[in-house]
Image (cartoon, rainbow over all chains, first blue to last red; front, top):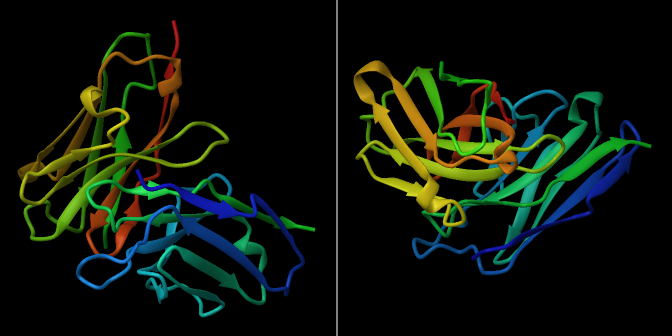
Length: 113
Length: 119
């Protein structure tokens, strides 16, 4: 089974600041087709999760360019610049490379300092 | 515009079978590459993928719950279903259904339905 480990678990931030969230997998997420199926989600308080980034670095429709994803193999990062109040919540990474099983990371809570 | 909405019993007793419905619009589950997945989240905890059903009828379950899960679909009525047998208190959670594409993941989610297992 693929394990997804996110760090940190909690991340205090000041509005306008910049933060990075790490997601590491126990196995390479490079698929045999050459793509890497690592996605990022944000769950705002009281809401359903929403897709932010798909396949490592592609912003989903309507996602501001303050969000950026990077990484390769087993090590991935979500960076948020100029943090705004609506960015607060819990961030999750998800792997779908090892289809048909999908695995979430444990989550990182972004909160105000 | 893709929308999904889950419905379910709210509360059920241990050992019973949980039946959930996902009603959706904006896509067809008969279209190549489309899927619907079920994900759950116990209160205050993380997300757990449960199962997926695809346009071609293929279904896949989380190995940790494999034998207890059944997913199905009614393409003509734009619905997907999840059954969880022999529930216990550990199955208490908010259950989500999500539009799923192989290369994008879960791109649209329903609002979720809370399910409590209690005697």
